[in-house]
Length: 180
Image 1 (tube, one colour):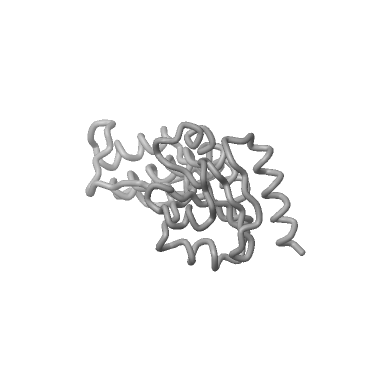
Image 2 (cartoon, one colour):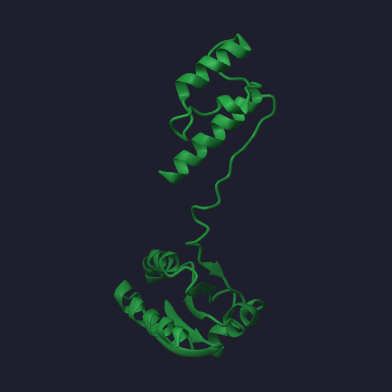
């Protein structure tokens, strides 16, 4: 809903600017949302053309709010120390591979957890095919495996495609220790 309003608002403002309509006519005095009928009337009066608005320059609108929070970043051997070991927050790392069926099952669960615990923990994933040395260092013998780190140290591991509640219980333990 908010995203739709953002797009409508930006589109109306851009169309008004392209049609050289004063900013005072963008919105009605009773609401903060663009009035489509008044815009159409104004643009037809200003442009004296067909109902289809004409733009001076092509424009694009990218809303980065959706998806920015629930992204699970990929960690590699080269970024491991920076993103995991030196991180002050609790870190959840999913060890996975593209060919792994159970990894595909748990992937949406990890994304949901990243969205729910945004700002409280860091959720990352490591492709064991591309970073075998890190997987070997932490004794990863089967995937998916989820490791929890606190202050750069491995604290807990969960092996297999487990229910969301299992991971949530583990995350809650590490968030409680951050508060103290």
